[in-house]
Length: 339
Image 1 (cartoon, one colour):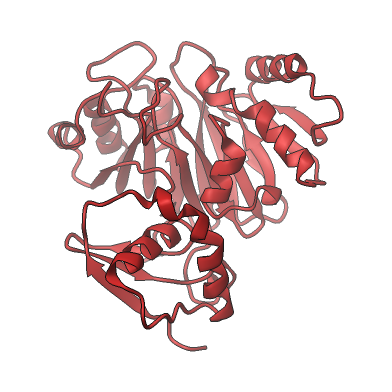
Image 2 (spheres, one colour; image 1 turned 30 degrees about the vertical axis):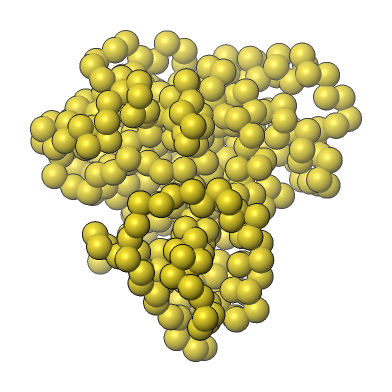
């Protein structure tokens, strides 16, 4: 196979990639026709920057502080090229009061055996498409809790899946109160035959979710929130892990769940300690105590929480010395290679 090329262009702050989202299927088609290599010699710098933004959430991408460097590997070549095909894509990163560029926090775990959706905030079907995930690849949905910003997109998702020809049984996991609330929501929308078959599967904190053909397992833990809520840990067969805190104030259960993880995606909703939620400073404390390598702040707003620079500084002041960043919509977080 031909070597995969790398492109580097000067980073700029122009981020209105919205205008070219519709080009993503075309870009991906070009990429696939090149058998895993993106070889477009005549791209202008401006279009190349947009190409990188569009492909970054669908293909493996690396960055440094001065340039955007992309090493592109198509999903069907990931395993043979040594790129871990399991990764988490952020579909939304905002609080319960969205910003213009931050929708309700929800995400999708993408793996060769299928995708696992975590919560359904907003227009989830469309966001899956924008993230380069085929909604028909969904094998399961995990609802962390029943607050509106985490379940309000469920009726629309089921409706769109059925209308688009989804022919699998969708397994929906959640604690008993969350599933009961979700079922009431579905009943209120009177979807009738316009929804796929669903297996409502109750789980309790401490349970594990294991798929027969998957190279990972999902562990759960209780959070401290105003409604029963589940944090999640995705463990690979070789011992690497990614953890999502879900909505919570700092607590031992989430701290223990995150211990030794490569990536911790943690909520950072409030500027100061607040019942049921976490501040950036507290998220830094949790990450430091758990010994994680990378901290990603979500359920965050520069308006309602604090500025991004201050949020990063707060995690440092709390003693966290690993990598830290503000979660970006459609950013992808893979488990780092085994050393």
